[in-house]
Image (tube, rainbow, N blue to C red):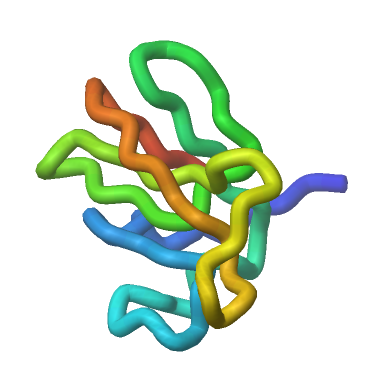
Length: 82
């Protein structure tokens, strides 16, 4: 299978939450891989490359609306399509 189509570059900031203004459905047509300090994370909820942070769920904790509690990790962020 030879895929010659070029994918648009990923935005500087992206969120998987459709309620967030940084949500972009077109960016999720293919799998997105996020690396923080050369370690891959599979459960990233939101990231920002220019500010150098990602947000991931904090265990099983939920907020009062039933959404996962997020923690922010800082470092060198890389985002690319798989």
